[in-house]
Length: 167
Image (cartoon, rainbow, N blue to C red; front, side):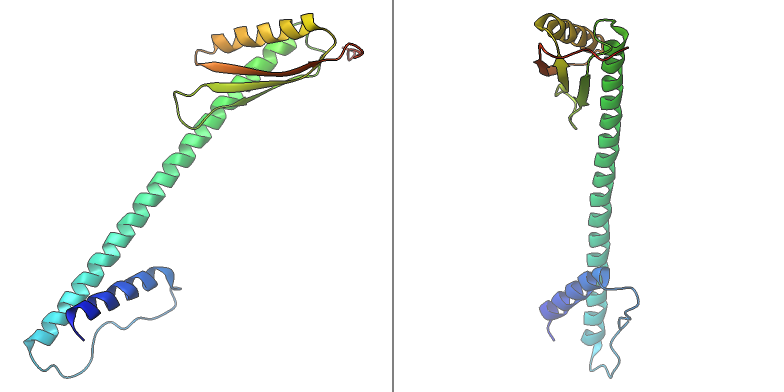
């Protein structure tokens, strides 16, 4: 077996060792007579190549895992930000005596990357255009007090025949 074949075999067995179940046992070396000093040098070189391949593969896996963990942590932080924005806007709507009995629901979405605006989608129904404008004005004022850039998307419908819920 020449050096290229040994290197290829070492790389394939190293890759399989990472994927294959742990209960599989791999041979630790070559048993048999050695014709010359080159054979043992080739085995040592093959072992060094396979060790380097395993270390490089493990390093790559650790880097990928580290990046994934950082992304998940960033997503968790941004989701927490969305909950805070949504709660502040919901509280502002509930504090307003004209709006607290109306079915108005804000939903905040915070993108993963900073620098892009927070989106607050406001859905619900109101009996008049004046109440719709009052609700949007209140939500936009509360959104500007949060400090970050917030974009409000209105999905509030005007239903003149709608009756207000009892308080």
